[in-house]
Every structure is written in structure tokens, then in C-alpha cells.
Image: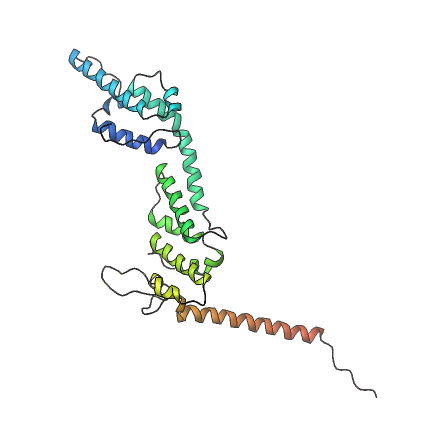
Length: 263
């Protein structure tokens, strides 16, 4: 197609195929014959021109079909009828796949042993699938569902990221990578030399200051954040006090009282 790239219609990519094929036919000045039947009352010259455009459009469309699809539409030689038949064949299936893809994104969750890189790649893949089916997914929605799907060892990061709506998917990935590194080597300081700055937000356009993504203050990384550590320490202390109180109460109820010496 003279450097015009159109994906092969396989039965699972109708929306993106249709979008690119329409653009290709428009560049070739052939899109008109896919939108209306041959007008009445054309002069002989215009009628021949229409027939040539129709022939070319049909050829371009059929050359972009997979072998299976080409056989299905082999007998049709009118560009508009061919275009409409392809559309009616795949539109219903596309709507079903669009619903499935949307639900897949909404139900996204990280697996117990899934790496941060793999999880973000999977989230991006689902978003790409949604776009290919004509379902718009904003960058904000992608980050929202990705963060919401965090659990297990990433639960604390999820709770923090839920309060920070300005993170990009790349920033979320960097934060998850650093958190993952801290779990793999909690006593090591090697990560600080390599990727310490990923716990900071990216530089803003109006400031060179980098901020801790937990407390939004400068000059430290999140794993060393006083606020975060204080919160975790307070939670641990509360649990210990509750546990101690419960144990004392159990001792008072079930403990053996002193027996007087009758000797």
C-alpha cells in the first residue's frame, strides 16, 4: 500500500483495523466508495472513475484480510457492501470483548509472587487492549486501577499512593521496584546508592526540589521517613499493649489463686 501500514484483519482486531483502513483509503481518495453506493446519473467518464475507485478500494480491503476472512468475503465486489458486511460481522463481537477488557482492568490485582515489572506490564497490556477495542482508558484511570490492585507486601504503598493522585504509571513502577528491593534485602544499603531517589516525586516544572512520597518533605527517602516509621512503631506498640492487657485479664480469670498454708 505504498508505505501505508494497515494491520491484517484477524477477527480479534476489528476496531484498530477499521480505524487504520479508513485512514489508508482516505489517503488514496477511495473512502467515498465505502460510504455510499454508486450515484445515479453519472456521466460515462464519472461512472468509469467510480468503477475504478470501487475496484481499487475492494482490492485494498481484501489484501488486508487474513486468509480466513478473505475467503469469507471473497464473493463481494462492491466496496460499500463489503465494508458494511465486515462491520456487521465484527461489531457485536467487538462490543463483547470491550466489556470483557473493561472488567479485566477494573478487577486487576497483583499476584502473590508477581514482580512489579510484570504487574505494571500486565496493566499496560490491558489498557492497550482496551484502546484497541475503542474503550478509552485515561492515564489517571490506569494508575487508579493499578494502585487499587496492589495487596500483600505492597499494601502499605497502596495506602500511601491512594492519597497521591498525581503519580504517573512510570512513577508508580519506580516506587514498587524500590519497595520490592527493600523487601529482598532489608538490611542492605546497596539500594540506596542505586535507586534511592525513586522514593522522591519527579522534579516539577517549577521546582528542583524532590520530595519523599510519604510525607512530601525533602532530603530523605520513604523507607527512612520519620512519619512512616513513627506510624508503624505506634501501630506495633498498640498491638503489644492490647496483647499484654488481654494476657493480664486471662491470668485474672483463669489463673490459680494462692492456697493458704494449713500446716
